Image 1 (cartoon, one colour):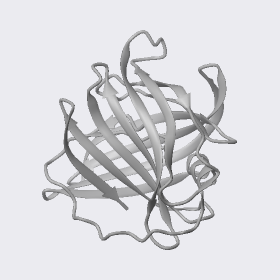
Image 2: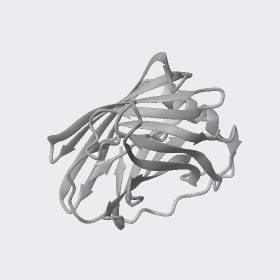
Image 3: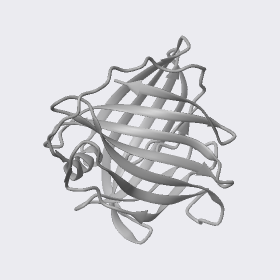
Image 4: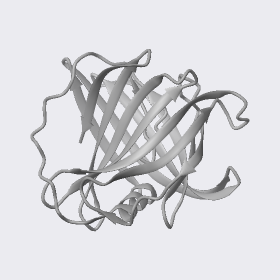
Length: 234
């Protein structure tokens, strides 16, 4: 099972998986408030934080520790960019299966995704460059959706060996009368255009854009065909 996290997330890592899915959740309530999306997404990538996410699949316990920390600004693809370092440690039944560190590059005012680098991806998707990036609305209501970015994967900074693509969108989804989930939804394909995985990285926020929690939904695929969705929660 591959785990990928970007702006939502470009989390270029992998782990072993089992079969099955999660329990059916209770239908959430839809808030009528307007939520500060740009504030929420900017804070998520510029403030240090750590999440402890868990899932149980057919009796197998999976745990992912995700840590985010800002780094000094650098030039990425000719643009002065802010840097967020994302580290992950994946455990299956409390045994470490995989660890990786990803650097994600972006600009703010508004938040725009620029790219990411990794050294541990088993599919060779180690260098990601945005070809299109759009800002999130300053504020939005539950039900709002739109584009975030499109990007191309390469094996390294030389960009001579393409390895696939990623399309990112956002959605603001119902949670309670006073909170919502700001989700960055990604579809990652290989160089043959087959889907490797889908992912929704969902930040729980209040109308002011304060981060209150995180959940991650992973869509697992085999040979481009959907297998199941696995949900990780705190």
